[in-house]
Picture 1 (tube, helix red, strand yellow):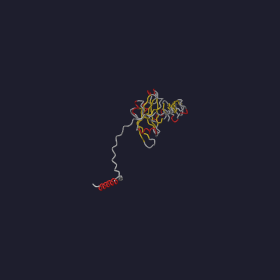
Picture 2 (cartoon, rainbow, N blue to C red):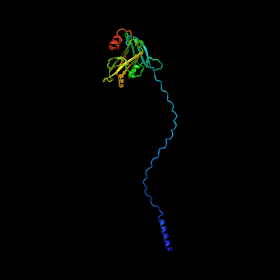
Picture 3 (spheres, rainbow, N blue to C red):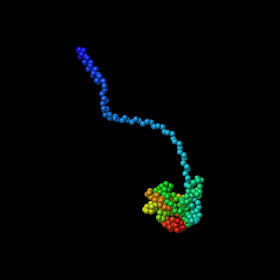
Picture 4 (spheres, one colour):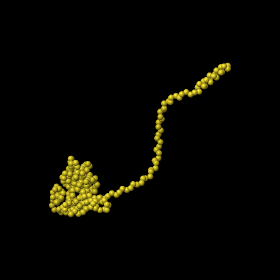
Length: 263
């Protein structure tokens, strides 16, 4: 190879190297690949320690106590032949005594002596859920305990006990003294628009008298709210006039007339 040819090769190589020394423009980014599957969750960390208990709140104020007081009622307007007065109220000053200014006068009741009989005032019906104090009460859903301090052992054993129900419309019905049977009563709901019925009875022992009712649960509020009331009459043994069986069959108006019972 002569000198001329070698010079030409060197010149071509130099031009090639010089022409390729500059980079070209960046190409367009490719599409992102699909995300990989998430890894499994790590284990829960240990629970932190409980914080310190807060300060106890202040005790609430003590509630007030309901009290009942009984006194002898002289013969007069409230009881023709005398009797017992029952007063109830709240012990506002916490002295353990029902003071005159603590008496709720609308709740005062009387158990009056009759001419040979003892009778209560008309007591507003206030049925509650049944708590069995006597086995016979287990056959009924609702009951009302009536104040019966005058119901002595002698009356229980030798006399008779009568109970009457006065409906919203003033109709008075005899209530059966029985744990196995009852008297069906028809009354009017508080609106005065519809009639409803329920069965009633009563049981008693010394100083204890329980008015018992079986009815649909919704009727309980009807009976309590429609102005109905009950009254009992206690007749000691050896009282002349009628046998116990006769007295239990007699309508209230005749018993009231016989024993001078006032409404």
